[in-house]
Image 1 (cartoon, rainbow, N blue to C red):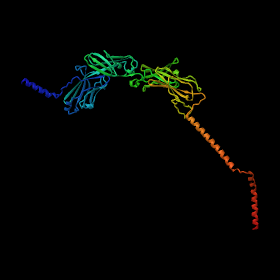
Image 2: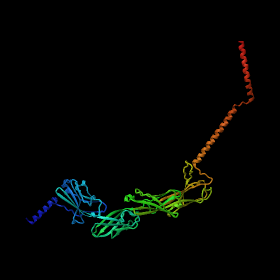
Image 3: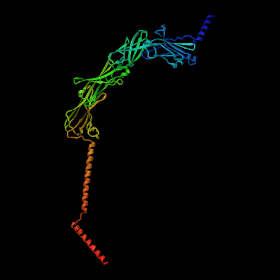
Image 4: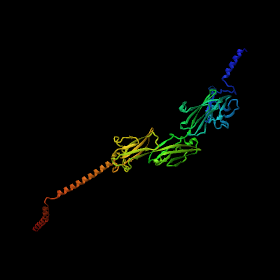
Amino acid sequence: MRPMSLVLFLSFALLAFSGHTLPGLAEWESRDQKVWVREGSSAVLPCHLSLRKMRKSLKQLPDVTSVQWKRHGGSVHQEPHGVLEVEFPGLQKTAQLMKPRVSLQASALRNGNFSLRIDPVWTEDAGLYEARVKYNTEVHICHVELGVITVTLNPPSPVMENELVLMNCNSSHQASLVETCWFHNGHLDSTSRTFCFLSGTVSILRPSMSDAGSWRCQLRYSDNKIISATYNLQILGFDGPTNPVVYAAAGSAAHLPCNLSHLPSSLQINAVTAHWSHLGGGHLQDWGVSQNLSSRSFPLHLPLVGPGDAGHYRCAVSVGHKTISRNVTLAVITVTPSIQGPVSEGSHLLLICSLTHSQGHERFQWKHLGSVPSDSKLAVATPCNLEDHKAQMGPTLEIPKVSQKDIGTWECSVYGPEGQLGAVEYGLQMTGAQVSNPLAVFSGQVTFGLILTLFLLLAACVVALALLKRAKTPAFPALEGMFAVAGPWMSMKENQKEKIQQTEC
């Protein structure tokens, strides 16, 4: 046979066998399939039959199909050990080390999907995995390399607010690490707290709630391989501003907040205690707060506050052997009049609104709410005429001459950049004067009208009776007596006349 004919024969032979797999022949796929996952998350190692093989198997594999996954470690030359083996109809063998973290989707096996799921992934799971699928008289082999990125915290989670924390990022890649960059909330700029180091460790000296959220580490190696992973940093601290201020009117109740950023139970914390303290009047006051793992709120309720209660309060929350604390400032609003007690009409009065522990950004506003008698259930607060009493700015309210229109409730409101912070009321009373009310005035007018009407009706009846009596009285009373005497005599005379007539008959 000529060399040319031999070449043609070998070419046709290769083409004839290129579309078929001989029984027992192993098909090695390239190691280009590589999956990178972060330790603690889940991984899926893909292994599928090609469409050509599925068509050849009439789109569904027979029941005699078996799947076997093995792990070679760092390279294919290392001795493999079994991970998971499944033989129909349902026999399954799992390596003790990875049980029950590995699984196959049974419903997808007959459709050519033999992907291996690992949940959660450990650092020791990194390496080369091999899947051997036997169906009919053929063998299909998949190779997948699993790379693991590890993000560790020191001290471990939960991270406490204002406590030093070190975050380290590393991977199972074999090349030399050149640079590690950390990105906070996905941005690379100075405001997003981005750090780049030769090593994979970043330190946060005093972590705050603004440091919580998504952190992404990006590893660059000497072979120009770039690997990245995302980590959600949870910080156990307090909600709200760093140094909250509570504004309360003197004589009212106050609620001091102490809210954790997370539920203790959500961070697998089983022991939480909280207590409040306040240094006032030269002595330390303490309030205990009961343990409550189902709530993240530990407020302090003060039923009645005065200027002596103002100051700094501390809420300390103990989590295990660690303690975090937050300071809360109580600012009390008071009104001081220049004249104590009821004020005489025409007096010059000053109402001074003061605030303890001012932050420097507060502003004051005075407003007249109206007069409301406290002993009347029908009384309704009536705002004052805006032309007479407009809102006045400043802590001091000056009334040159106190009059009836000034009587009632005055309100001093404290405002900040975020709006109204608090308010206190002052009741202005005047000596020898009663607070009038439109309903009371109307009621008095009705009562007076009813009394006047009854008096007029009574007077009319008396006059009518007098006139009636006068109409029945005769003009000559003496004649009325004479007629009265003659009456009996006339009667006797008629009787005698009747008797004479009877005798004659």
